[in-house]
Image (cartoon, rainbow, N blue to C red; front, top):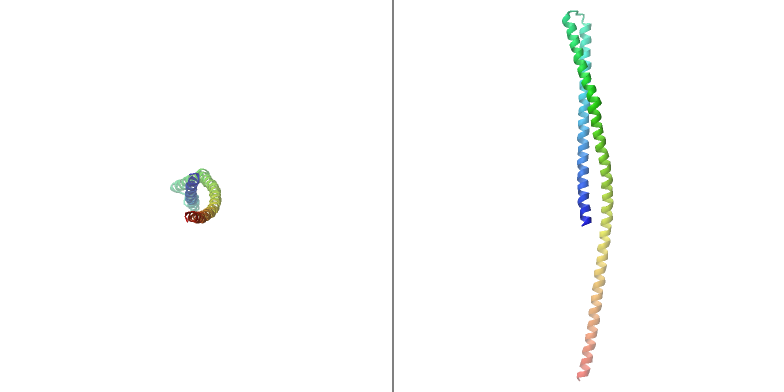
Length: 167
């Protein structure tokens, strides 16, 4: 029963390892998407700042230009702040999650390797047990054959003795 439980446990470990590998791949894809999002925020901030500089260099001096420049710079600041927040917090969380999954995968690889070693040993033991069982059957058949021969000899001798006594 214990060996059967080990086999079931090995199957569960293997399935868990596959799920972990899929989780790592998904987490890495999510991380890449997050990085793209952060870069996008920073790029938007740069673009807005460039527009503000262009407006400033346009030579227009009316109050509306000043308001537009302030609005562009405020929006740029918000995008930069959003990118910084995601870079500091969400990125770090994503990295920790990936690292946790990688540690789990490493541990599972060790378990899988151990189970493979156990399986190899069990297969070897099975082959040895099969050979031993075949040898035991052969020895038993030989003993049965020897006993049959002995019995046949003794029955022949008995018949001979009984036949000699009857005549």
